[in-house]
Figure 1 (cartoon, rainbow, N blue to C red):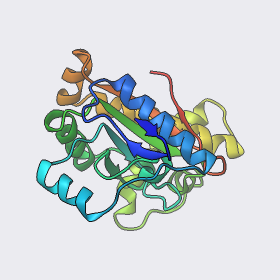
Figure 2 (cartoon, rainbow, N blue to C red):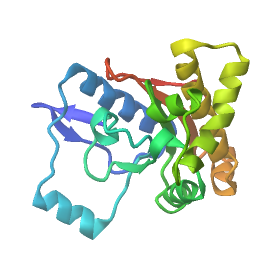
Figure 3 (cartoon, rainbow, N blue to C red):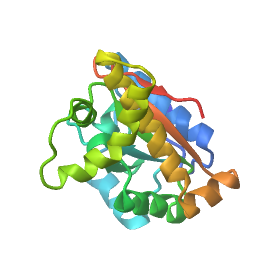
Length: 210
């Protein structure tokens, strides 16, 4: 993505590589952190264009439903740029996996990011041993192995919360990579799957090493 004079948002029609897609996210997050978002077109003409030509998102982002983590905003992206899947704890189940499979297979998205965040309430609830009511238990079960791994590593206090969050991000990246659709594309070099963590106060996204 480039900014022309006046800070007007533009992006390439085609983003073919994961490296290019990641750079667009990095640049967008940098603008968000600085409090200087690009001027984006949300008008009728843009909506009509997307309706008639279809979508060409350059990245899938699997993120938490937390209201403090608005994915399009924190990456400063416009209509049609991100294929977003949000669920508490940014966990991956069959519905999430199906959504990601669709985006990478049929929309040819070159990058998938699992984005967790600090102070995650779902992770904290599991660490603290809170009782899960109703369908909340399905989320807790996905988080429990990561919490157990962080505890086994000796983390305590606030470090345990954040280490559990980091372990969960890594675990969900690996779960996505086990999908036959995703694995085939990763093995062929046409797709990358990354983890990242959003820091609430600074606004920065830190990407994990591949």
